[in-house]
Image (cartoon, rainbow, N blue to C red; front, side, top):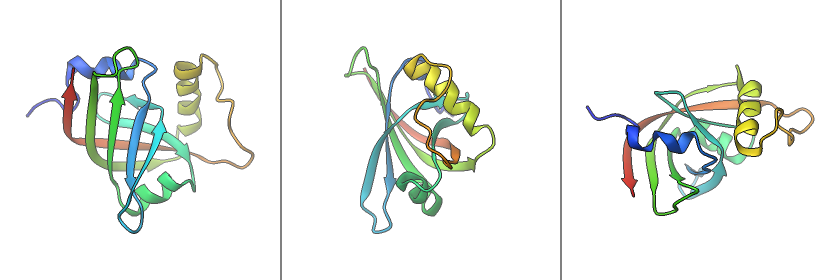
Length: 132
């Protein structure tokens, strides 16, 4: 069985590469949002706040698609289709701080809102398509 995320494209998760996350609205229309992303060796991970549209969408229908584009070469990318297999608040605050360090160069996520609950989403890749 081929690697879920080919080794040649794992560097994208070390770079400040945004992912375009596609989820499905209740009526089946696609909804796309830019997200910070991470890879733990098995799952692609993104982080959001509870109650946002993407949160509501993946809780209802876990099927998602992401495109991660190399910020140094926009013709090099990986598209990942899969399912959100875990949704948890455990470790989500620490993870968003880790992502703020990667993407913003700061130690603490600066955009948190009062009462906001951070959530981690783990995607099990089922299909990948690469370019470049």
